[in-house]
Image 1 (cartoon, rainbow, N blue to C red):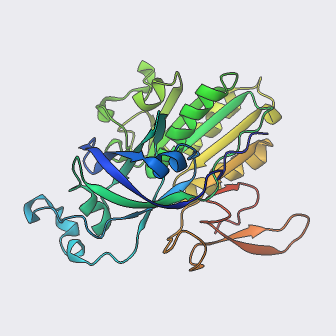
Image 2: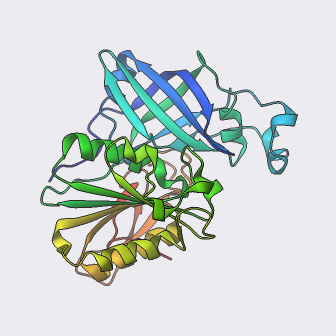
Length: 316
């Protein structure tokens, strides 16, 4: 078994912004560069790990550029760092480059849109434990729900570059095409045309899109499409398949249920509000089952996760 988890010393590092571009109505990609100690630390950043980013010094956008529903929140003082996972990490010589995918939903991400080339940001990381690659698997299914995309894009790169023997298929779902955090004319996607998301196609991975309203791909829940796909693949043996998932908790609960019913290994990346990210504030508890017992215990999303075995999490 190959463990994708924290293998580098975490710390506080400074990163330089190289680019900050908008890819959708509220989606942006921030490209960062680390050098010196930061480059060495983040070169070992694993899919599923996360960082804590300080955005307190980032400027506010002009009022006319601020979404109406964020006008009041935009003036809020930012006291805490915000957690983000990287969508891509590349080490080149003495530098490491990272891609951070984000959605503008509050005062911190709103300010993040004002970062431009040359700006510096303070980042704590690498934090948490990432996805684990089990050596006997032949098929890996990546199930994305909305903004659960970044760690699974990173995992897609790792799987195809380091474990070419594993077939990878990506499933991506959202309420509507406008809420899929990918590039391109997503409103024109048709499953009948065999569309694949560029973010996965570049790694040679086929992708299946589902939207609740049918505005892109399959009409319905991505978990329904996953269930359908698994039912159609009668030749797959459960012990040769693994599911990796990140997204809304209701989706993760259903993915874990499908995996359990099929006898398939499943790893889920959980999300909690993290004030510190290093286990001090105890604010990110996840209820988990205790092996061979009816009892449960609480683990910290920031230290024990954010990736957990789907069978151990007690979903509400």
